Image (cartoon, rainbow, N blue to C red; front, side, top):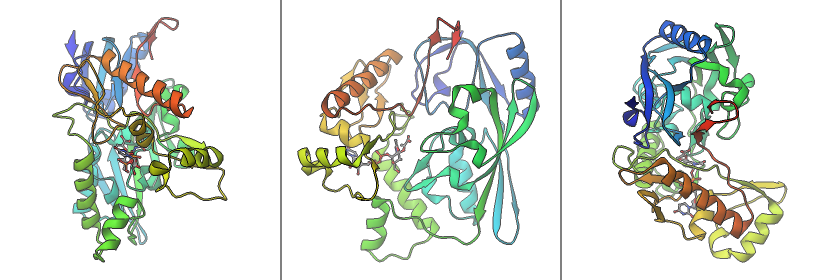
Length: 344
Ligand code: EPU
């Protein structure tokens, strides 16, 4: 058995039967088709930055190391063709270094390009779906490559079709991003808005990049020091009616959230709900709810997967009990399913 401690950003010491590094798409196709034919348990992993293994994994872990970035262009657009094992933050830096602007709000997000697509990652007012043109995938059932266009990926908040169980048969090989050449800053997220408006600063892509990197460092722990996988829960959607009720009871906390009477629903910060439940710093074993951002659980060193699991269930229970709101997981949990006799 081998440990995948260095292949998951929670730094959990999970044991697996074997680890196989995939360096190109032929490698990937050969290994995946072989393992599926043998009905062997396997899991395809990028950087392990959005996943919690609840127990040791009796199967093969395939690590995506398929890398490469190419640039193409026409009059209006840049096209970036990026292999799925490329680090997402490296891809963002690459685009900025080549004077391709628009992605700067997504700076410094851990994980690979492949997992960024699966989760439709987003930060500071932008989601990656805005730039996805085509996704090339390997279909495990047929052994053929095929393409999904943006519409067929069914992107929504922290979701794409590749996250749904049926579509796990598709493995992302590469992504073609399309970026409009005419740059417009995206600064409506309040942390950026106040910063750039207050000081009448001239807005440039590099300044947005630097600010985002600064904000992320401020709020999000470095996983190399305190293992973590970013936000554990999605920000929930509630009805405006319920929101007004909550605002009445918790005026001090909800006062700053702007809402529109004409909409039926509103997305509210899960961090705020957890904060009101007074759970910041709450600890089980070596797992702790992060003091600066309660949507994050950190591994203080030597945490067990079950500590983390208990902690996230406790958060769910407390929030549900207090607000009657059910938090939905943003991350993926891998555990053995005794009915299907495999890990899901
Ligand atoms: N808040 C509190 N207490 C806290 C921290 C935050 O009450 O201790 C409340 C505040 O009202 C604050 C609000 O939560 O205004 C939002 O907090 P923040 O700006 O940190 O953003 P978030 O909604 O908690 C989301 C993403 C992050 C992303 C940031 C910035 C989700 C689930 N999370 O967090 O994404 O970096 O916005 O855009 O949508 C991730 O997905 O892993 C991730 C880190």
